[in-house]
Image 1 (tube, one colour):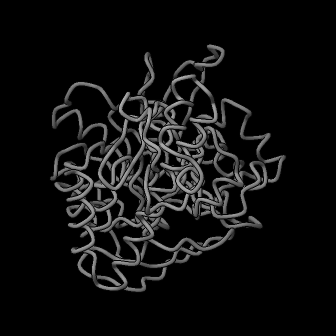
Image 2 (tube, helix red, strand yellow):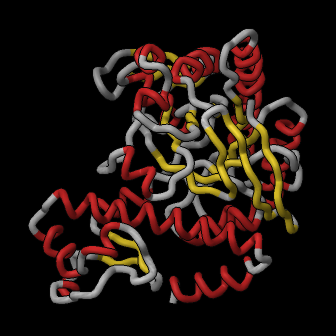
Image 3 (cartoon, helix red, strand yellow):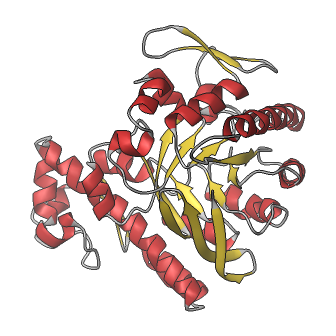
Length: 372
């Protein structure tokens, strides 16, 4: 069963430990995005070596392939992918609601598989059953966010979407409790707070979830650090302090991590660090680098002298530039290793700064250098 211990807290910001059946997560922590039970371009051994404490897979994608039933037969998500630490599953609500042609009703969501065109229906109950088959330590309730990239949605429509999320959350919780009754291994469930970019709706959603017996909470439907500054405090001041909070899909930029931590989030996940790495963008102490730029052709220094990853310990900027220019897959692998390690190491340093009561000074110094 999930347990959450707070070691130190200042305002909403805290550091602690989440204990799961597959191990402990020292928070705040960045959770690796293993969407299809894999992190693109990296092996599980490499992922573990980067200091990742937990991974998050997407139930929507795993239901489509290979099938949640097969993951169950393999012994669950951790065993299936060879990962020895804690695991999360996102319900895939965001991905489903972003699909073209999706039809949403009170019952659930109807859409076509992007793999073979099959007609599929996901309900709160079927989402819970699939996530229990996948067998992660922590599940997310099936939610109904406003899809990323759509035009701004008004207050009334956003409220309707939020209310649907609330109805589905109650059904998820009931189905989860049925599945947990008598189960050999306890799997935890987070409710997902919605409400768009409206503070009143975020407050209402947080109050709704705070009154229910979820093991923790996901913060969904927020896609920018500016939204975080505006709304995270509104929600996290209401959500129970003794349960962990996960900011879904955020962590591509260092500012995401600092803002999330400052306003009370404990864990984060994002595909961004490895996605931009495969496109030739790397993190450095002084901001992003586009490794394809001609100026790096004769740069025999390293990407980040402070970094202890495989790339920075063994290879020059010029070598990585060469790998990308000739489209060598090794370059994408090394860049992915670096970016993921950069984010994990940044979060480790944030956690240490909180414990040493130096968060503000570390934040200001880091962000001033990074965004100079």
